[in-house]
Image (cartoon, rainbow, N blue to C red; front, side, top):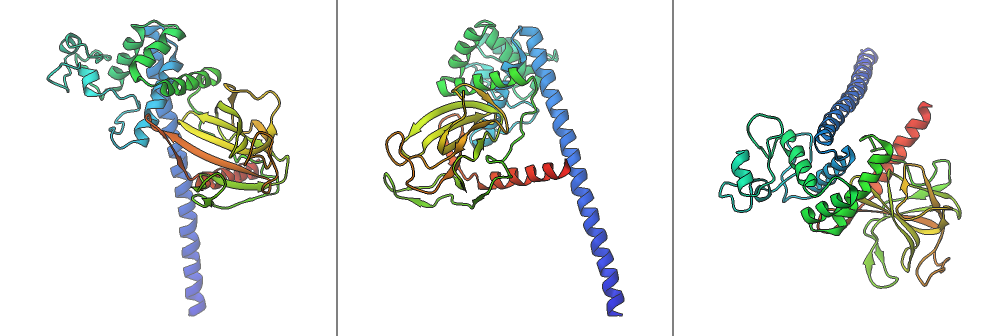
Length: 338
């Protein structure tokens, strides 16, 4: 009886496990389909704004992507209710002197100098309506001009922060090159065939140059192992730092800064402003740092990998270890399927 009962329990467990796997697979497929649908809706809105304003769609995509990530990173901004991430504050939408900050009347909004417009022809200018919001942004940019130089001026006057303008224009370059919104792929920073090891060292104490904490993950490997870009992005920084040695900083489309330090050297031709993608070789593992330019060998060779998020005001570090594990696992699974 015990064996028979155990057999039935085993069959039940296997059936449950299979059902769970199928459910997860179906959920993943459904999520992918939903993501595709959202990307299509966003592109449709960007193209609509382009048709009306003659401003290329990738400017709207870049602004939207920047703001979406800002709203995700901050608690003082409302979360998006539609497919767009662009948010205009009530005084900006309705007008700074408008006593009704939630005004939806296009005429009174225009009288008070607000940016809100009726973008879908329903007679209302709603700050939570995607059509109205994208057309409001298009109208605003158009008042400055439709060429890159004037759009840059418009962005500065709107955000009043040069870093924000740089981040948005970096995304413009990326979207313009790849002509798609689906740029969320990542890879592990070292080739998986390499001999490497790492653990979560976030927050560990560091003493050289003053007491501080470790803002990243150290991936130990031999000298010369290729170091790869983990994402689509722009090379924002390349050069020497007394702590990180030869290092590269890459800004992705999610406002995240990826920091690669202690390199042995850079890939030939790598330059600031260059667009990279997952797998692009940017340098190799080394032991540079902890001194003036050229200092090396004060610690075993490894890649220091850090991640920093811009929230529209400042930039803060967060633990990259969970992301590294996820990218490593996903890349291995991809390789097995080939």
